Length: 161
Image: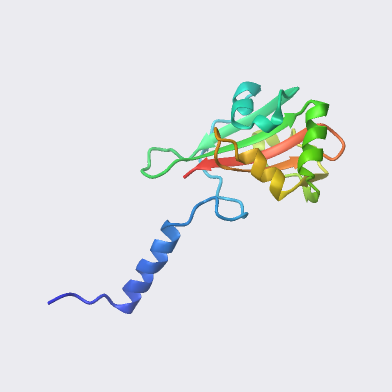
């Protein structure tokens, strides 16, 4: 005789199926940015240039990366927080091409980088974010914040999962 699944069990299974199929990049809400952060601030631009070619050849970078691969099974998500001093021509090109106009406060980065983020209002926008995080090398998401008067870009990115 076949077993019948109770309505409550069916509801739980349906909720778990929906939650299990949700992409961490499917909405604009910030993802949980948990994981082991090394605390080492990197200043090598090559890796950022490879994964985020929109930054061109930056004058300087300060960035950290981390992931959630603490030995637990499941997909790995990678995160990057970065403070990038762009070349003035690159900053002007980004403002012109993507016209980020949404005013936003500076993002809250991991503690080891936060002191490098000047307070104030930054410019951001959906098109700019899509272009920043959408390179074939990174293939994730990013949220970029351009300083309105200085060649400074702050961004947070994630990929994987």
